[in-house]
Amino acid sequence: MSTVLKTSALEQRPIELAVVSSHNPEPDAASENTIVVPVVDDVPDGGYGWVVVSACSLITSFFVGLTYSWGVMQAGLSKQKLAPDSTLAFIGSTTISFVAFGAVVNTHVIRFMGTRNAALLGCFLLGFGQILSGWSARSVGGLFVTNGIIMGFGCSICFLACGTLPAQWFKRRRGMANGLIFAGGGVGGCVWSVLMQSLLDKVGIEWTFRILGFITLVVTMPAAMLLKERTRRTTASIDWSLFKDPKFLLLFFGSGIATFPLLVPPFFIPLYASSLGLSSSLGSLLLALFNLSSAFGRVGFGALCDVLGPLSSLAIALVVSALSLLAIWPVSTALAPFIVFIVINGLGNGGFFSTMPSVVGHVYGPRISIAFAMVVSSWAVGYIMGAPVAGYILERYGGSEAGRAAFRPAMYYAGSMSLGSASFVLGVRHLTSKQFFAFA
Image 1 (tube, helix red, strand yellow):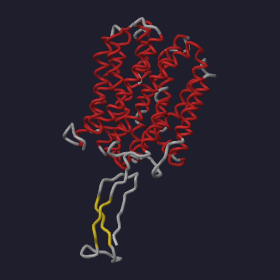
Image 2 (cartoon, rainbow, N blue to C red; image 1 turned 90 degrees about the vertical axis):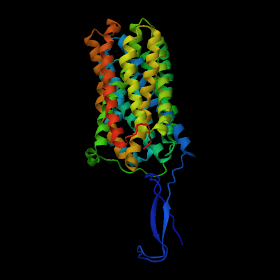
Image 3 (cartoon, rainbow, N blue to C red; image 1 turned 90 degrees about the horizontal axis):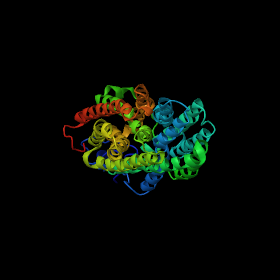
């Protein structure tokens, strides 16, 4: 009688050899009854996994798309003189910063409740926070609580649920699956930025928040019901031993630095469009183009992970983003070069999000839940301070009313941070494999 052993779906280990005894209760190496059988990996790489990918992509279109469309709302609030640009950018960055601040805590929430129930909670907070923002649109403190904290916790839960669940369903196609999921954020940002500007023009800021909140609840909660785990997640906590690994240190600090410039373009595109003499509606369309380019970047770089490897793909995405910020945006004195910048930066920007889950899964395998939560926690400072620092620099040089030249120092700051993060990722790539274009 022979026995075949399988790994758990969550561990996703490669084929190994297991020693099994068919008769002798205490087998030894010399026993003729001892047989060697393969331990097989049963990750389906498809099937119901594609339903999971579709549902996660739809949810991502809201929690990423809405946060990346904050620039439209920021421009509207700026016109009403609610607060300086740096403060308004701080409100928007607070929302997405909770993806990092709540990473370790919310992995325990997901473990306790299960992915489906946790995603339902996240989607509810996402929509409810926007509805409450409709009653606090004239209060900076109120927006920090409703749009920043409440909506932020919803974003954090949704990000962790949708960002790590594909690892249970995909291995060979994991990069493509993650790319399709996070592409939903780009498509959503394209839709919401246009719809947001249309609602602002027709019903004002208060009802724009409320309508978007109701739409979020109606669409995302049924999608969350489709999420399904193949195995229950292990409890993620802080594994201090990872800080002894040079690869983890480089990835931890490199990805943290990378988040500083990520929100600068989407938050400031409408303001920069205004400095070029363009209308608010055209500014929202340019932000929609950025988000659409981000969607293509998420899919493209996600697929590239399966070809060149995730670390190489992440490094390329960061370099593309850096070059667009340092070489193209500063010379965008007209609509045409500004569009070129928007498209190229959107591609690189989107590539960061779709490659990061694959990078962590590639380097740390079965420990992805723990390692990913710890890596994401390093994004907190960059998320919450990246765009506000750019806003502060802008104000120091005269503010958005001072024209295009006032934006350039903020551009150079963002581009330098992106280029610096790429050097950290290349360091991880060097420690992992000497060959750059190789899937190690």
